[in-house]
Length: 346
Image (cartoon, rainbow, N blue to C red):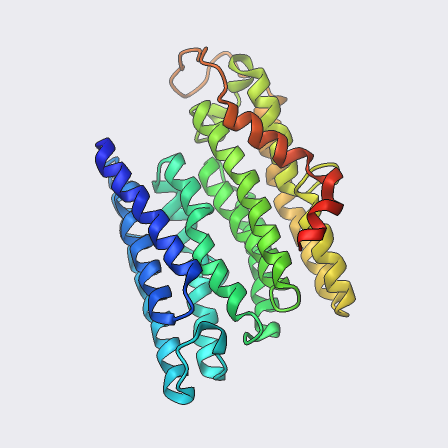
């Protein structure tokens, strides 16, 4: 792909995201989502591999269906109430259709099946965009319409997402698929709290995006996409593998790291809302995803490669780690001590 084409598609992504997050009218929000979808498709399919073409086709069909549902929801609400304003979504049928549309856009269970397949067929940098930037516009719409949505339905979908994200990620050997199921699991944490404390959902999304960006950029630097290749990275880049270990533990939500902060606040808020059973269930289900994070961390740092491996040997990379990865790693592991400062913004 030429640099000019890449610049056009990246600019379109930024434009589409900006239009959606700054709009008050359903039509402009929908137009922004469509620009986003059309801009990311060439980035998914740029390798011309059959798997990449398949991923782009699946992504297009899913997002087109979700956009149609979103438009249908807005039209239903406008038909009954005469309102096109995003925050004035009051009709129950429109709210139900919108919940389905946003769940499909985000990859929230039970509309999650497309996400692991699309991520597996995409390059690592595009997979990073799909996991973070592409979820920002629908997350903003979820935030704006959260008072109108059904909290019971969102709670059930959130628990199902956390369960399926953890359960289906256990058996994977492809790192992109593992990170896709990790994303589905994290979306469960965001969806369960959105009706009660929407700002916590955004905080969780920001921190998740930060940590996921670190993991993807690290994997892109060491050119790793499956567990068997990850086992050989310690001998080549021990410092980067150690950073990956810490970031994965943060993504799992273990206490001394940044990833613990949103989980702690969400459990606290759920308990205040007399939802202790839901908090207990989602906490126990997140132990499933903890297993595959520890498996990734174990492969990256503790296992030594066998003498005969079934993959092609790679050249030793001597290029220095970029400063972006160093900054991202620091922030994605060490923000917990300044959590009182972060809480003042929530």
